[in-house]
Image 1: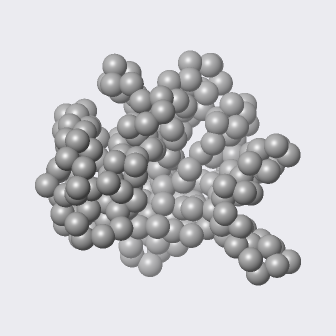
Image 2: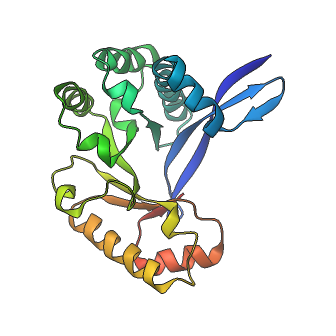
Length: 218
């Protein structure tokens, strides 16, 4: 036997407020948990990744509605893959999740890599516009590595900037990493974004990030 589930990881403001929760997909087979690094590539090769993404959208939206009903005022962040955004039916799946769950769009965020924001293909841009028109927030995930380009950041319609954990795991010892985090945090704030540091695991890292000026940690 096996199944999928969503686990929710908190994003905490430096003031202790629950800023959001990120929905993380988990898979179990015969009672054993499979790493996403194992089952996601299989889903991509078999074409199931879009169906998994649609399931995640619906379940994440339902959880958002549940949090609202029990009086917890926070957002639910849901990861969206490239395979979903290049699908002409993405907007339908998004609207269906909102309708079926009766979730408020403003309480949901879509997390995307920067490369997806910069994809100029008409279908990707159309799907991003559909999300924004629905009132759903967009977040840049894993910023600072890969496709990151400061020249393009000003044109990305995102309200949240999530700094890659690669900068966090070496804190507080690595002063160069600290300088980069502080600079990216200031830039994000100047652009009106909430800045989140990912992968925070201990008090020393938290203290360094507090000094760097980030808004929240995960």
